[in-house]
Image 1 (cartoon, rainbow, N blue to C red):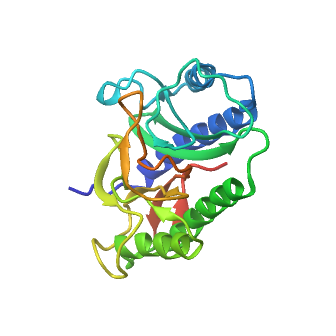
Image 2: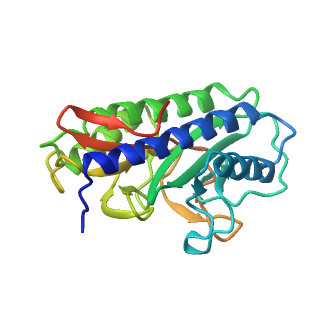
Image 3: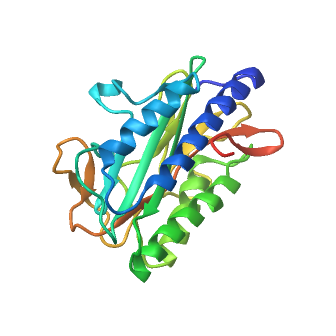
Length: 248
């Protein structure tokens, strides 16, 4: 069931989204060779709590951390650990904030030091595919319009789109209806209406899109171990067009 949010609720989600965006910005500054993903998790939790919000992921479906930290071939839900980041790694930071009863969800991909040209291109293409998809989040368009936009752009650039994971609605729980795939047909799926709040999150691979369980047993990685990138925003569907709720 898709829940429609009031303007007041969307404003609360926007306030939580600002906290989330601030936290991700600070974490991105910390990403460098020599730091562990567990240190990033602890920093994220401390910052969120200091601002008066709560980490949305901690305890969700048994997840014991505040931050999902996924390295290289790992695409999502990676456990923070004592792994020390090294030059050339690609790190996905996926974070949620619970504020005044409502959740927000956002993700970025950060290069650790100098990375290869193709890795940079993978990151940039994924980031741009999110910008293009957000433009489709308008009243009267469909979920298929969003997924088709991501798929066409990413595949035209020679990369693959993950099929087994998708974006989602969000609100009083982290994952709500509807599902928002990153592939599909124009005009297919539910129509977007005012008051919907959704998470659009392109997940892109340099190789094949088939997945396996990560070595930590919780996250997901590419079966062929190809590099991946992931970006995400929480978006409100409004009469004035898409409103990004997780940016500064």
